[in-house]
Image 1 (cartoon, rainbow, N blue to C red):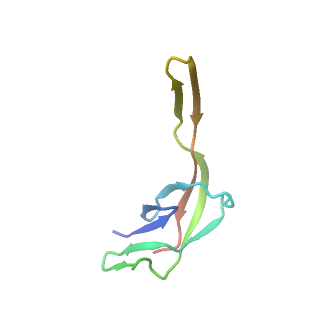
Image 2: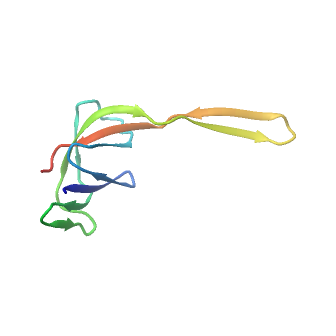
Image 3: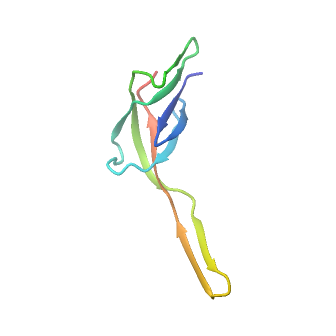
Length: 103
């Protein structure tokens, strides 16, 4: 089984061939653009495994598939005995990428 573990935006993601992941939103990336990801922690092939110390010296090519929003959360602020209540909603933006540059 082949897979990569990549560090981006302070988080680690496991990528397998043909699968996609939602990472933090990238402003300058539009749908169809390609990104180079260079913080590769681990690269696993069926016959061997490469471990970076802390990163491997290779780059991986990823394609931006979609820009999407996460699940909506509600934030409730209250102050007791003061009749103060505020309800606010938030949806986090994500960039969905798929790895194309490893075999």
